[in-house]
Length: 398
Image (cartoon, rainbow, N blue to C red; front, side, top):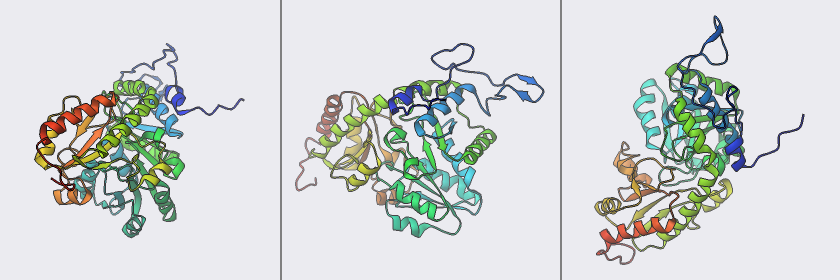
């Protein structure tokens, strides 16, 4: 039997593990909008029994994501938080402990503080860019290391290979939230990670059309555990949203290329701007972790954050003055989205903790879209000028 040729990412995104409906052979896998499926005989289904357990359209999406992850399978969920919740319900029990990145999506923090803590699960949020801090946080009951890199929203990077080595040394699992870069720009499994987490809402879909999440791993036992928890709590992705996500994933390589190109142009412009205090973007040589980004990422990505030389009130006014960039939570879409993390994605985190992590009231997160970068820059410039024109920047401060 001839061996399957190794396909490039752009080809995998379109054709990888693609299946056709046996009745129609449609190029687009159809939406199988059915709650239940007939059985050949009592207790013998043809492959699917009930859409809370599995569904043909969701299966097609899972195969497509597994193709770009490079894993034998993946499991898709109704939301990214459903995927993360399933991960921890699958591997943790009362009395267990998890170590997580301290710069991380606020919903993950909320899950541990407001839900899992009440079930007896312990957690430590630490600077996972500091390997000594990670080692110091380990306990006899630690079961998993969970890192998000780049971290949301300050783009703090974690060395995936180094953390994976610590996990192996101590017999722990290492899961990576790879939402900001996707498997096309960062390959967690090639760096030793055990589990990859994606919010498919973001770059995988890419069009603000769906909400979803996925878990991927090479461990068949874990895959079955994820499916069991998903079936039990009822968090499977819907057929219609799986269908839409399947269409989005086909253009992922092309979109990511433009996202990265545009973000680099805008990051350099922001870095040179007198009203900008600091830019957080791993593609800039001024980034303290530039060497790590070069080593473990194929490209810097389309996400950046920046702080203005301005008060919190003026920061809000600048955001409100934007005409092209859309004020919205979420990221990774064709439209440029601008977010105020301290009041949105990380609003549940106490202000003292936010400030310690650099998530100040002056921090702005930008998900750079596919518009012409000149137009995005023009919009930012007019917003800066309309609010900050009268502020003189002297010696780096107002």
